[in-house]
Length: 46
Image 1 (cartoon, rainbow, N blue to C red):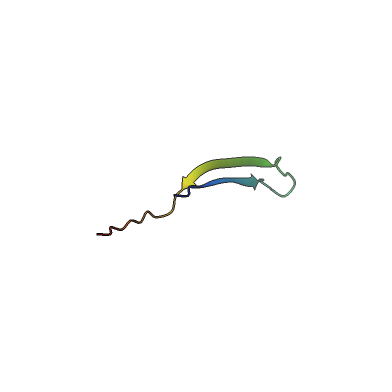
Image 2: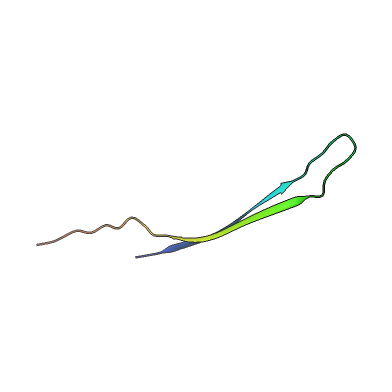
């Protein structure tokens, strides 16, 4: 049975802006690591 592992990272960058002022860039990073295995299958003979 093969187990597939995945690592992913998402980054969100946001700023607020008015007519004359812009806020500094704020960043949020979400990371995750997970396993996904194939759907198990089995059969009987006999």
